[in-house]
Image 1: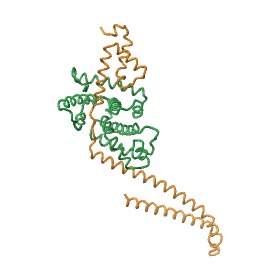
Image 2 (image 1 turned 30 degrees about the horizontal axis):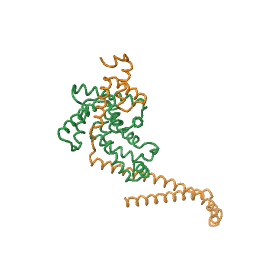
Image 3 (image 1 turned 180 degrees about the vertical axis):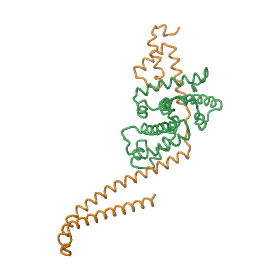
Length: 195
Length: 166
């Protein structure tokens, strides 16, 4: 059954469809939440809350709209509310502690690439991950939605509840800030994550 | 000396330069994209900068995907399914309540002519001291209580049945 079928079934209260959707989106949704809150325990809690919210609100979902932006917008609202409550300063200011980059990276199962390549790749990813962590939440968010979730700009605007022009501005500033951060943290080093 | 100085078009160069990050993000219009492409064909500085952006974006795309713990996923599944079941039950109960209220009104209105006939005929014959206001009050109170009782029994049985099947 495709995504639309699963969503339609879920709207009729089908618990199997809920389970199928959870399996389909579990990694992406968790990654998005982790990028927003930068804390494993909080991301896990928000992950659970998001699916409860999906169950509660699915009947109000308009099937003519894309499911993904709707789902991510639900998660976003919960995460932003959480941050506003727990760490209000994190919504405005870049914080450079880089606490959860290693936590997240450490939990990735390693592939079957040669060991030396793997080490270099991991090092580059770690640098990118660290730089990403230092960005303000709205910049982290726009980068993860565009380049990790591969969402279209219109979908990102829907998730963030902002005009398309704001998404473009944030994207440009986020990339600029990311590059500056990498150049200042690792001057003269290869941080680009090139293969 | 780089190509922009040769062309003597610093302003265009600056404009294109500011679009490079958006170009790799796929956030330019077709015409802007064409402008960028034709500019980098003759500007090595912008071409190199664009390559840097591409590498950065490539790195972001290859960042590892953290995975939630299996126990967390299972907890989320269980909590969501419970919420869904409660939501379904709540909607069903609400619908049932509306139906029962409608039923109560139908019964009340339909029984009114019968009640009038009985109170105007038989009851007066059995006990002429019966006051009509008292009868109306008693009949309606009885009907309301009966309807409420039926609704409560119905909902209680329904819930019991659901708990048994859960």
